[in-house]
Amino acid sequence: MTTAVPLTNNTQLSVNVTTKSQEQSLYQSSGAIVAAIVVGVIIIFTVILLILKTYNRRMRVRRELEPKASKLAVPPPLGHNSPSLAQQPTVTFIPVDIHMHSR
Image (cartoon, rainbow, N blue to C red):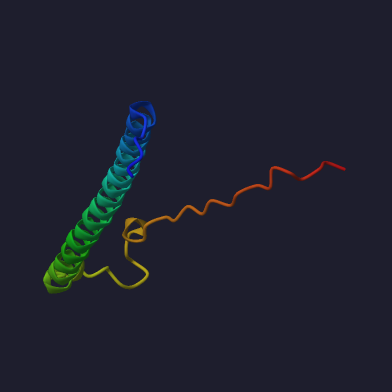
């Protein structure tokens, strides 16, 4: 003997399963999208870091190989008869403590 299953329960069950599988697929796809964005950002930061590192290395090599004749071309005059313009005046900035209380 076979028993007949009412159609209303069967269709309701299949709709429930379909809704759950759609929600599950949405959660999985959103998780995959977030993971792809995170991986993309990490790759972009890595590429930028490598570009800056190579740029810094090239600039350092260029500075080291650059002739420094501009500083050594004009020696400073020596002796007591030299003009006072040969020595550059230096200005020292001493910050004042703002939180000092007057007594």
